[in-house]
Amino acid sequence: MNKPIRTVGVFCMLLFIALLAQSTNLQFFRSGELNDRPENRRVQEARFSAERGSILAGDTEIALSVPVDDRYLYQRQYPVAAPYAHMTGWFYFGGASGLERSQNRVLSGDDPSLFVNQLSDLLANRNPAGSNVGLTIDPDVQQVAYDQLAAQGDDVQGAVVALEPSTGRILASVSLPTFDPNQLALRDVNQVQENYQALYDDEANPLTNRAVATTLPPGSTFKLVTAAAYLEDHPDVDANTQVPGGSSYQLPGTRTSIANGGRSCGETTVSLTQAMEQSCNTTFLQLAVEEGQEGMTEVADAFGFNADPAEDYPGTAASAYPDNASDDLLAKSGIGQQDVRATPLQMAMVAATIANDGVLMEPYLIDRVTSPDGETITRHEPEERAEVVSSRTAGILQELMVNTVEQGTARQARIDGVEVGGKTGTAENCDGCRPYAWFVSYGERDGQQVAVAVMLQNVSPNVSISGGGLGGPIAKAVMEQALGVGE
Image (cartoon, rainbow, N blue to C red; front, side, top):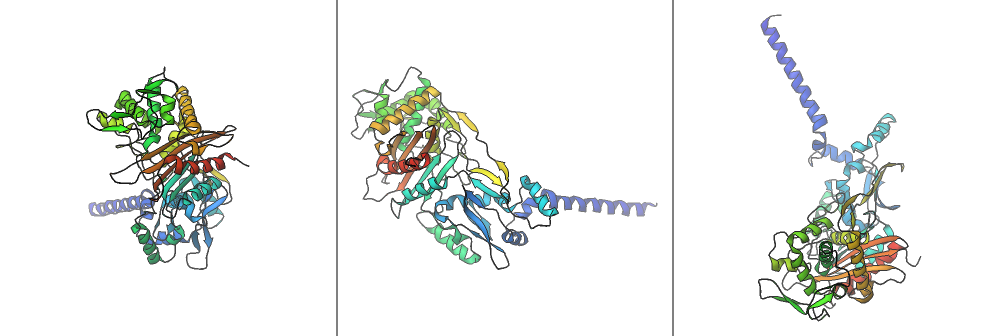
């Protein structure tokens, strides 16, 4: 073969190799990226026309695809819209949000874990159908949490989260105000955009999932974390030990004093039980300073602050505990103020850890994935995240929380025949802002447990702000439903 022909042959072979490499790159390595591009209308139309899997809470379908007589074949619907909107999100021609987005490959049937089902559909010449996503949510507990929160008034802004302490299962997650995802899943894209803009412009922020994405100062509910840090470093301390108290406390290095709002907190000392029952600011300001930055940060981080709270729950925000604070700011962090920020999910994790003898289980929302015919493909197994405190410390904290319900500021959560521990809280986020009401609790009955956090962000000016008065009855109703009280 002469040189010119050989050169042309080598050149053609190189072109063929380059073409093969580019084809492999496009069809294999970049296929997911290209399919997900918003301008890829062909893929969008195919997805919108496919039978998408359902999202279920128990046996209740909270998102499903129903057949329709038009070019797209299926319409996404949300039958129980308001209580679940922030979890499910919505699915429409231009995109998706919430679980509809994070679980899109499962719901659409494209996830690699569904390979066997995909192969079966191919061999049987069936149109592929998406798999179903089953949540950990108990629909009865979710509905009670929603109803109780909504009963606070039309303008209520708040959230409720309930966890199963021994597993980390999220039993309820409610945020108000809410919205109707059906109005964001319409065929008319222009109408969807108009509906979305109206929600986006709403000053009440109905699109925000306050249960997992809103971080606010947790106020006195954070005193549980301060007490945990102190107890871990002082094995000789128990519920009856005298700790610093007093009617007021001057922040280190300042002329600012913080008082207890008229509560009985001793002249100079007070028992730890009474300090928690009466929610004595002076006690926990001083304990935080005595414990120091390192000790407070270590325990706060172990409870889940400064970390992603739940990997499978879309849109969650990390709660924050500040580092490198001066002593005056460190003191204020001990009562859940200053730069401490927490979501209701985070504070439910605190209560759940205490109820679970000091062990924090990984919170999770997705329980299982099932095929279109109901066969289980994957199921989540509970995972231990951390041993936050010793069982001894947890036992003392349980005693403190129960006493706070029986004799202290959390009486509104008492349930006959149930061990209930609780902690109230109010907090401010800015000068002149109305306080936020917090309530965290756990209940135990016949070996079954539930932990509940309630946050009320916007309350009528005509209502007295208190964590116990506002959050206590809500938490009580949720615990009664979760524990089967009265059944």
